[in-house]
Length: 391
Image (tube, rainbow, N blue to C red):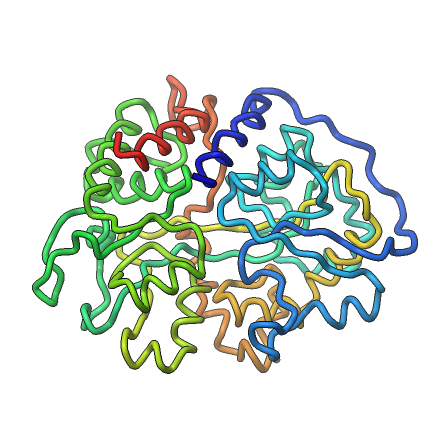
């Protein structure tokens, strides 16, 4: 399985997590563009109008800079880490469960924010975020953030589900049929945190304070929940477009998802007539992502990379992307005056929920909430492979 291979490869980067990241020499000026920039990105993050002509933040950039944008889509953070380890890319839109691994593994370089004029417009809550800032050094430019939502079929759920239990525990759904074989789960190791978040509310006696900082007992309980969920899951997902097809054609009625899939499904009139989809953040809250555009330590096209990072946080790009993906801009100014997002879009996409989202980050052995230490990421990766294999 491709995803399992990438999860194993990513463990190479984890071994460096206990050390101090080596700070490569920071770029002091931007020269002439090299003619291209190669980016590893989440699906839907870099659009050139091919899917919908209204969503295109590539074409004008290419015309203005002569830097052709080449994109490699990745389905999980582990895949992103593996691709950056392999090399050949200039930038990656890394989530918090990959960014510190990339820094510790010396795969990305410090960013000179003085070379990014729009840096000062970035949300202050993100400018010094711990998933891209180490010892006061920035290793990337904030891009977008959001929550992992519960997507559901409104023909089955006349009212929005209030709990993640509909995907974690066997039960009859409101249409009277079992959820077995009709729900999905994300196949990345970081999904263990979703189980832990559910158990924070379901079993408070476990004492989970942070879904990314688990002691042995809490970790075992989370794995046990995922093992029991294995019998319910028709397919684990990491390909956003495959999940869209599963909702449309394969009988999936509830799953963890991204706003991106929900937006595309809701824009498909034929699909909505047959299998209408909506989304919700249940009462237990949600995990989420705050993504950072990071530059490879050996980027072949650093000038184009810096030009792209500046372009990526312009209000127009930020607003258009938020409208397309269902995310929240890293630049608050993008929330007003964007025709695609509308002035209500940021609130609709969850801007008021910032403090409630448990943002992805790499679990490490030395952690704040557990005196005896936490279960580190390499075990998350290997144990999730076992869960997916039915073990």
